[in-house]
Length: 443
Ligand SMILES: Cc1ncc(COP(=O)(O)O)c(C=O)c1O
Image (cartoon, rainbow, N blue to C red; front, top):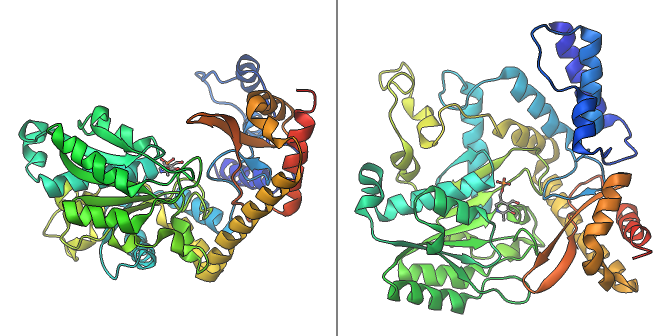
C-alpha cells in the first residue's frame, strides 16, 4: 500500500518535473482507449503494471504546466500550491465542521477575509466553491433570496417573472445559473458591449426599463471583470450607480480578472468593485493555485448565505456541541461534503507574499503587451482568423503547443492566447508566433 502511494506521488512529481518536449501526445480516441486498456476487471494488477499505467496516464495527458500551453484560462504550476494540493488529498477531510477540519475552517476564514480586503471590504462573508460557475450561481441564488426570502419555502410559485442582466460577452455560467434556478434563460437580458467588449451602462439602463415594460421584475446585475474571450473589464462605477438607483443586487464576475486587485498598476480596471454586493474570484486562473480554487465573496454581514442555504442537518450541525458552533460553516454551502480549496492558496500566498502575486499579475500584462507589439510588427497575421481550425489541428497532432480559438460576434475565428504562467518568457511567445506562421505557411 505504502509502496503504491509512494509510486503515485513520485509519478505525479515526474509528470511535472520531467522536461516534456511536447504539450500533448495526440492519439485518436479509439487508439487511445486501446493503448490505455481502460476495462475494469475482477482481479487486481501487480505493482509493475500499475506503474506502467501511471506512466501512460501522464504520457497521454495534456501537460497544462508546459510553458507552451496557452489553451485555457489556467496554466502553469506553482510548486507551493501543488504541495498544498498533495497535502489536501492526503489529509482527505471535508470543509464543513470545525471538528473534522479545524485547521481548514480557520484557514478558509483568513483567506476569504484577505481576498475581501483586496475588494475593499473590512467585513463580509464568503465561501470557496467548486469553480467560478458555481460561485456565480451562489451569487444569483443569494440575490434572489434577499429580494424574495419566501422563495426558500415556497419556491418559484410565490415569485413574479424575474429578470437578470448581463453583457453580451459574459460567461455562459449566467445562462446555466438562470436555467438551474428556474429563472429561465429567456429572462437573462443581454446588454450591449462596446468595441473592447465592455458593457455599455446606458444600454443596461434601457434594458432594465425594457424588462420592466414586459412585466418582469429585475433583481440581479451580473457584471464581468475580465471577460472570458476578450478580457474586457465592465465599467463598475456607472453599473453600481444604476444598481443603487434601481435597488438591484450587483455581482461582479471577476473569476478571471480578480487577480488584478493585487497590482497597484492594474487594479484601476476594477474601480468601483467595493460597491458590488458579491464578487466571484478564481485564484485557479491568473493566480495559478491549480484547479479548483474559486471564492464567492459577499459584502453582506447578516448571514444571508447561511439563511439562504442552510438545512440544519441534526447529525452534523448539532447546536449543543462543546465548541463555538459558528465555526461549523458548512451549512452556508449548497453541498454537504466540500473539498478543501483554501490550503493551496494559503501556502502559495505565505510563500511568495502579496508582493510575489502582484509581480505575477504585472508580468502577465507585460507579456500581453509584448505579444501585441510583436504581432503588429509581423506581416500576414490577419490570415490567422481564416485558418485557425487547421493550425489548431496541426499543433495538437505535433504536440508543440496548445492555443484555443473561437469566432466572436461578426468576427471570424481567432486565437485566444493566455499568458499567465510565471514559467513563460518572451522566447515562448516568439516561439508561439513563429509556430503559427510555420503551421499555417501553406494555407
Ligand atoms: C469570466 C468567467 N466567469 C466564470 C467562469 C467559470 O469558471 P469555472 O470554469 O471555474 O467554472 C469563467 C471560466 O473561464 C470565466 O472566464
